[in-house]
Length: 386
Image (cartoon, rainbow, N blue to C red; front, side, top):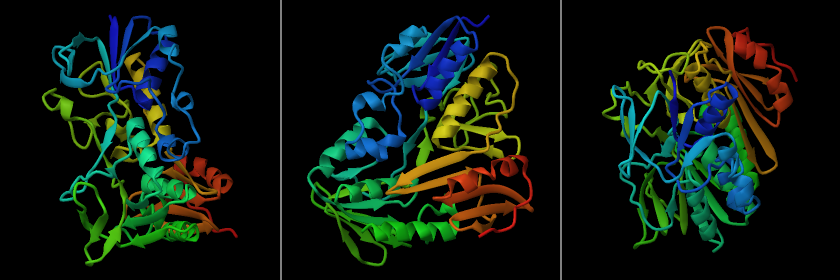
């Protein structure tokens, strides 16, 4: 009998898992552990409206503070998971608390990577938590020159936000274009043009090898021998799943918590969701993804698995980004080697073995969403229009 379920991680996935457990009829004790000391909040605004000062603390929260008690969810703030004994079904927190469980949802998310060999000086940031965003916003208020290392979605969003605040911005990316993993080369080049048109100094193919400054950063060194002056540096070169607390758990770990198509680990009653989960997509195989829509959907799917449902988690995959006045969206899951085909102005499809597996668009959301069914069913790539 399942009397207590523990959700480790008050992330987007963790909160939705807890809510879905209640919606699905679980009436037992439900504990939600948060490593942070504040009410669970939404992360996408951290690089945009919240960083720019256009979104307040109340609006950032995922739910009102009293919503958890109303659902009978015990929200433990400042309770960082430090260990898991899967065999004895116990979670240990950093302050020594031990929680037995009948069911467990692992939703500890991911943390930013830091480039090997790059020193950490004052004025250098990653952006993952609300505390990160508050500190960065305070530094932005000094009107510094800003260097953003990494031209993926987060780096590009931070660069756009900084420019809208009137700051001098240099965006450094090792790849030939921006957001290339999601958009492909041609749309990535369009994104480069958008940022340059808005006054960002975009440098693609740029490899950062060091930082300068005495105590506080004053610049970045590039492999070609040049230096970029900067009073503030934001590092956005990807994330890694938070699994160190699971090292001795007995669970299989490989770039995340390895799960089957139902988000279940090999240990009965233990599931994973969100950035930390590496699950077997029925069509794409083992994969891990770090985006908002996936965290919501997978949190709910993992909860349903704990409640006895056996429905494979097979999302289409959806990502969006707002930069300046432009809307950027992707559908599906692209892999290196997939063939890129321009389907319409601002719209690229990605083809694998003759099937449309993903698409990306800039200011082309309506056209993109028309491809959702084709991508979901693995249909043939449509002909170009326009």
